[in-house]
Image (cartoon, rainbow, N blue to C red):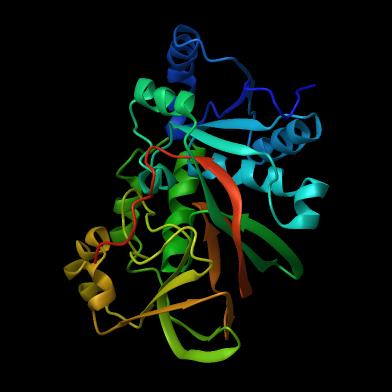
Length: 325
């Protein structure tokens, strides 16, 4: 049992993160933590969803400092475990809980927003400094077959083509294959498979778009897909969800403008629309699929809502990487 005043960290370690990089590098990270005199205990995950259970159990047992040693998907699982705790569920926030991360994943996109270095020793220095920032979180309702489901996220959710690419990437990763460039490979390799679906989008109860969509992102932070900026205007504590919607676009247009995914300038293209709002609703004629923080989930209809300033996180800078466009 931990007390709320304790400075001891619980490390939730995903051995499969970064295509087994977690297995290879955890002994090194553990030695660095000991050398830097970080007071910690740890739990190893054994499969998908396990980090959620570990986090929920740990919060119930009094842990208030939790560090993810893994990737964006592990962080998402931990968030959902923390937010499932009755006190958090009732208030919509994580009182006295601090989340941190030592990045071991393939994308590590949430860390890009908060200047968490990929160098393990430097990330541990930041953990020790414990400079914090209180960010927003998103909550999405979706369907798994006919069952209504709910998921928290703290980085970026993707739909349509983005969800297809994430699903294919995750399937490869689950087989212990792939690497940092796997996502980009499927960005191009999946172009001939995807079919456009008509969708209706509402922002804060008002009609925003009706028509075919290629891809869509709802963001709290601005990076996904290993450094892409598909929601470049996102601010993680402004109480708003940022939306980037790509309408019908040919595969050749996607190939031509792929580089714009990385500098955020895709939002200036004529086939792209952006919105901001507290509540986003999406319906579709066929099934549009979803991923949140890289985790493949279910399908439309979707309802997204923002929960302002509810997660305390350790950051590498006094301000996260705010929009510069």
